[in-house]
Length: 377
Image 1 (cartoon, rainbow, N blue to C red):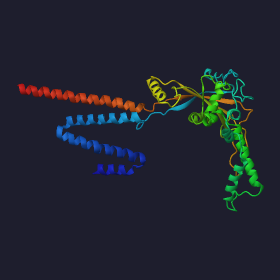
Image 2: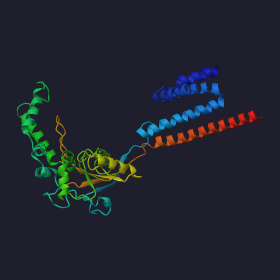
Image 3: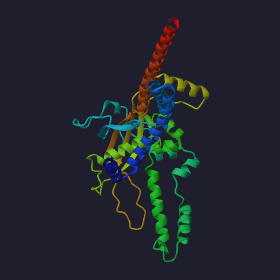
């Protein structure tokens, strides 16, 4: 009785939080479900044979479960794919300006990340808003290169009229026009700082025309949209925030930067169009590749000029500081081992399942041999 009371006291002392409760639930459920099946089989076939049959069934079920894990990427999972920073270069990535920090050779095809004075200049980046003004249609120009002060005024007035009289956000008299002017200035800054990656997300035909005319020579690199490079941009931003480049939280005057353009190179070939033949051929080609080609992405950022925030107003849009150099962050895609644990469990369970089946088959042969021997005798 003393041992029973000791066990009960020990169980009562355990803090049944989520981890312990979950572990006990799994162990108890496994013991009841699998133990009950083992007990029924053992009473009918004997202890040894029943145990061997139950073990074979468990490994057979584990094989099917782990195969489904591997097929759909669920269950036991490994490291997920991620972007890893390989190098950081400040300035022109195609010219070795600093012998202590030379740019990687893979960046040689990228142009000098400075804005071209005129479209068509070599070794520079054309300004996206200039491309819109020269090549864009009237609808695109109205969307990206115009400021409708009347629409802004109507929105500000409608919002202001909905506020109560004692609301501190309520604008009176000239304050309405000041707010309209502020919003118009912010919209003008966004238009002027439009990047080629953002432009490709809105009008990809314009960036293709820019490359076709030779205004943007990026060699083997591909201009990416901001949305497509979102994960790489996040990884680069997190790395810059932790690196010793003055972007830390303690440097309030210069701790922000503006993401410019993103370029991609390598990886499996992308589809040229959405045609049936192109989709089928691309799927066959990419599936037949034994290894994944290395996938690189370059994210370029530039420090923003500091603006003192105004109390009661939204933070002003980040504006590029033209006196600061461009920082190129080279990232490589790490494919991870997302399905590897499921595949290993499938292989291991399959081998144990085959071994248990072999033991059952050997036992059947031995039983048959003995029965035939007894019958002949």
